[in-house]
Image (cartoon, rainbow, N blue to C red; front, top):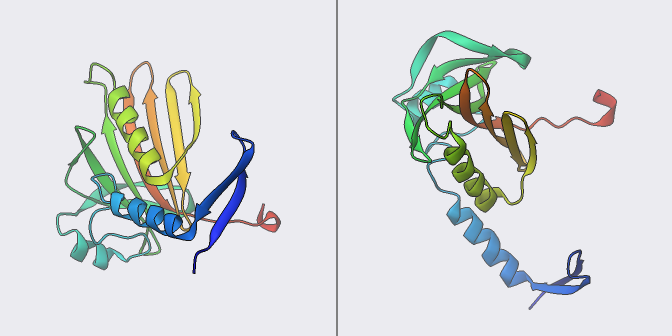
Length: 182
């Protein structure tokens, strides 16, 4: 049995037909391409406990003075620096209520000639290949790109201010709100 989906592509203004087999192949290819240095470390998943994190990533160390964020998040565990886009990024694991809610890789880029622009561009291309087109913004001194999956928000940020430059890649648990919660 062959299933064909037809729709009008906005830029072509004509019907486009996709077979169900093509869609399955595309999804499988995107999943296989997902494994990379920028993905969550092997065995690590949002929603796991701190004990599970220590088993999955035995190199993590407790942070003496955790960074605190809204929603009760605390960056209580840090992993060994890992190479991403040619630079060493250090992952920090943020928990709320003993549940992993956020993983953040950050790299100060003050010492780089391009102040992190090359790493941002490489990670942006990776994000597009992994998740598709991004929602982006660019202001003087900063650039931001984000993607969403069913249960995860991913964002990439490059800040190049007068005194400090950083590149940051974040995976966090997606929190959905309906209009009555706003």
